[in-house]
Amino acid sequence: MIAMTISFDNREKYINHGDLIMYDKSQNEAYEEGIYVVRFTSDFVIAQIKQIDNKIKLIYKESPNPDHPSYTHSLEDPLEVEIQGKVVWVGKKFPPLSF
Image (cartoon, rainbow, N blue to C red; front, side, top):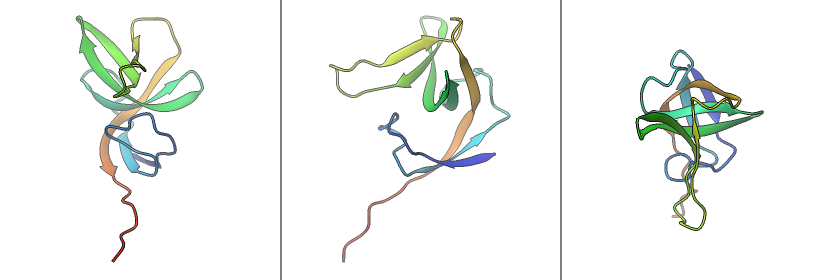
């Protein structure tokens, strides 16, 4: 298990900047759908792996805004993608409370 603090905002629906995640390095194959830490070219991103049209797809940017579509990548395509592990826990960073 690896713990890391998120310092980017690419999974706004699930994981936000400042959240702490734990991922399981032993789960570094795309056997099941889920949220994964992925090295994409030289960057680490939080990505969702889904089965779409009978193919495993990597969704590494999902936007709720229809003007900014999701970026998807088929794991069968020859592009530099390395699955680091499956996210198994998220600790949310809450804003300061005012009393």
